[in-house]
Length: 132
Image (cartoon, rainbow, N blue to C red; front, top):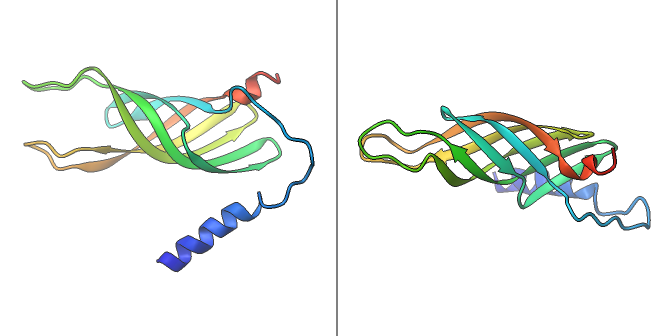
């Protein structure tokens, strides 16, 4: 298992080891903002620390997703409707559109077990908007 993960990391990083051009690009805003659905609630998230691969207008990102969850709890004790959460997931963007499959963990409570929830989302790649 460790061997296959090491190979996957090397393959993902090997495309960025050699520069294709000598010009450095600096962006004040470089990220993705996504709105979506997971675990019977909505979320608004941003790409955080990640490993990414860029090819032309496409960008594939595997990383952490700092998010705001919008969900009303049912029951006698309730959390806030807006709650900060951290997820992890896969994001694919083409030009200024971004599509995402996030994974969020719901912690164990007195009545339910903890579990991972899969969602989906659509959003915008912010650094491409300034070039349009």
